Image 1 (cartoon, rainbow, N blue to C red):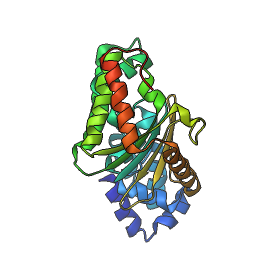
Image 2: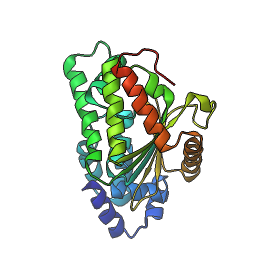
Image 3: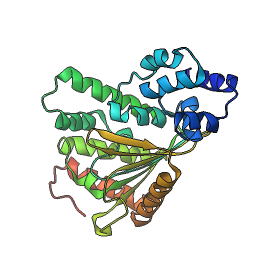
Length: 267
């Protein structure tokens, strides 16, 4: 609703997205993403919009409600973009991606992050993560293509039972042809994303976004040069990874090892 009102206000003012972007010191595509709902209208931006469009505090008033999120502040904008993306390409180095996690795996991750948090707080975090996974309930969209480092399979998060369930869940999604997953094996050596995880999101009516994350920090960008560089990194990763068929075989093999409580999984 807020994005739609922004579009109407801009058109009433006789401004193109590019012209409004120049007044706000952002790109025209950034304005388009706010209108489409792929970018949040943050408080400082809301003030600038009200000033540029003469909307008498509309965006400041409505921005508070629009910016409420179940997700950590550094990830909230990316989570909202993810929810309306038509394609997501993701690389994870140490963990199973959030969209592919099971409740038990997510709980183990959050407990590791916040070992003294009350149970209710952990429950809320797990519930928010599981709500994200419902994106995959649709049989065809978004297209999710995930590349995982082998370390994400081998790191025993939550113990063997949790890991066996988590990897079997991924295998089931692959076998249903709902997701594409590749694994970059340890034998691949150095690769194009050794510096950390990466997510690319594509939309029907807006430019693509890339998201990179560090502890309690995240950066979502539509900068063409940055997105293009991240796309290249992702393509190089796919080239270094095992094929989808080989990756499925490895995932199922490691899951079987965990199921038998083998602490030295086969290669």
